[in-house]
Amino acid sequence: MIIYENKTDLITRKILVHIARKGIYDLASFSKLAKSINIGRSLLYFYYKNENEIIDSAYKIFIYELDYHHAYVKQRQFNFNEYLDYLVDMKDLYFFLIECVKIRDSRKEFNAFVKYAFNTIDRYAFEEFTKKYELGYVETSRLEYMYHSLRSYWFENSGIHDDWCYEKVHQLRDDLDHFMIGLRNDLAITPS
Image (cartoon, rainbow, N blue to C red):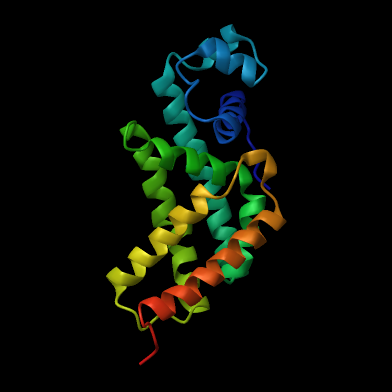
């Protein structure tokens, strides 16, 4: 269980959940943000001078939580299906990451969130994906392209934060299994 010891981290956590649910677009409006996370605007100004301070604080919380979940997944040695199910437990971080992916081209400051996730917990998912579909023989660049394409599909079809549940994950996992059968046939991917 993740525990926060100071008010700034608790408020930042609320902001992270706000972004996961509603997107990144309100960060510049402290009035809208304060109303959405149910705190006074003056309190928000007390803890953050501007949007950049919010983003810096969000990055700290994001890494803290992602590292916690990454360590848990590795310790439990989740296979790919278990990892995908665990995304329900990581719902806030997962949808926060999706929001970062959506705007990373126009808002470069959110690239750091995406890079960190892709180089940690997503790297674990990639390794488990490779094992599940027995793709260790596929050239690395081709395999990474396939994985990134399927991850993009997954992100685009995840729906919204409030509807995220095991049933949705299982539906997307079934889609993924179906795509993998098609990819094996289309690309003539067969073990050597």
